Image (tube, rainbow over the protein chains, first blue to last red):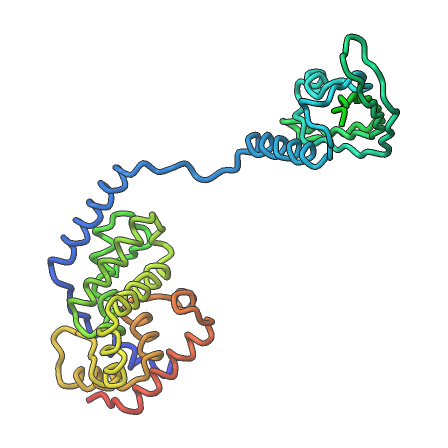
Length: 165
Length: 163
C-alpha cells in the first residue's frame, strides 16, 4: 500500500487548464505547412559511396602517381623505346574484362648505359640504356571485389638521342 | 485519459496531451503563451518526423528541447529567465482549473518543491508517464525518477494537510 495514495488522488483532482483554442489550429496549420513544404522539397538521395567511381578514380590516381614517381630522365620527346618485354596496360586490361586495374608498381633494379649506338635511319647517334624492372599489376573484380596481382620482370631498352654537346 | 498510444491521428493525440504538455513546458518558461509556443513547436517537430506516439518520452524530450531553444534564442531573455529562475521556483505556478482553498494550498506546496521533483511529479501525475518514460525523457535512471517522485510526494505531505 502506498503511503502517498491519498495525496496522489488529491493531486490528480487538479486539472491543468486547457490550452487556448488557437493552439490546436496553430498546430494544424504548422503541420499542414510543413507537409506542403516537404512536398516541395526535392530531397537529394541519401549519400552513398559510388564504389565504382571511387575505384576508377583511385586506380587513375595510383597509376598517375606511379608513373609520376618513376624517374625517366629523358622526356617522351627525346626517348625512343626500341624494345619492351611487357605488353601494354591496355592489352592486359582487355584480357580481363571483368577486372578493373587498380594499381601498377614498377621497381627499377638496374639501369645500364650501353654506350652509343647508331639506329637504322637515324642521323645522329643515340645512347642505349637498358633498364631492368619488376612490374606488379593489380586488378580488382568490380562485382566480387576479388583482387588479382601479377608480378613479373621486364627489360626495357631506351635510345636517347645524343645532343652532341 | 484515453490511451493516446494507439492513436495516429494528431488531433486526438494533441487534444489529450496538450494540457499536460503545456503544464510541463511551464517548468521552463514563464508564461502560458510561451509554453504554448514551445508545445506547438515540439509537437509539430515530433509529428513531422513521423515518430511513433508510443514513444511519448521523445515528445517530452522535444518539449524540453524546444523550451531551452526558446530561452537561448534571446540572450537577454535567457538572462532574465535565469535571473528569475530562483524566484520562479517559488512564484511560477502550474495552472489548474477551478481551485478551491485546499487545492490552492496544494498547488502552493507543489510550487515550493525543488524543480527536479516537481518536474517528475508533473510528468507522472498529469502526463501519466511511466518511470521508464520519465527516465528516458530526463536522461536519468528509473530509480532516480522514482526517488524524485517519492521525495516530492513526501515533501508535499509535510507541507500540505488536506482539510
